Amino acid sequence: MDPVTIAAAIATTRTLVKSAKGVKDIAQGLDQLFKAQEEEQKAEKGKPKSRTQQVINIRAKEGDEAFDDETSLGSVAADVLEKEQIARNLKSLEREIDNKWGKGTFKKIEIERSKRIAEKHKKHREKIAEQQRKAEAEKSFWKRIALETVKAITVIAFIGGGIYLLVYLKEMQ
Image (cartoon, rainbow, N blue to C red):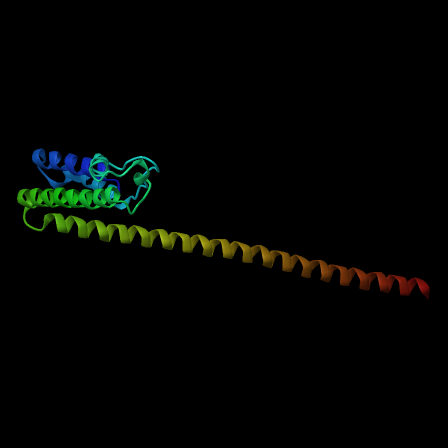
């Protein structure tokens, strides 16, 4: 999770909460916040993840190679500190929303969002299954057409051969 994106989304949503008259007014900010939390961005190799990591690396006297090392003190400390900062900011946002619209509103928003995401995934799976059924039915249809065509050609060839044999036998007499 990219701490800068999440921090920006939290700050934007907190600003919206202060001026919002209804929960719908902060919907876009919450949407950006939840999307930022779900995305995982990989940090570029050789570059510090954040200013926190730079400061810790300098104070721990770690070199530039420590930025690539996920186990270096700077990387680990930066990850932990950024997660803690994000958690505090998120808790603060949760309190602001609950204070403005009643206790438990933020949790209700999270639960409703989870339900809607599950429903969206369910509909997507059903759509894929329906497409597969249609493709199978169409494939089956063309197989039946081919089989019936082969049968018809066989019957016509058999009847034509029988007629030819009768005509040939009649001419021989």
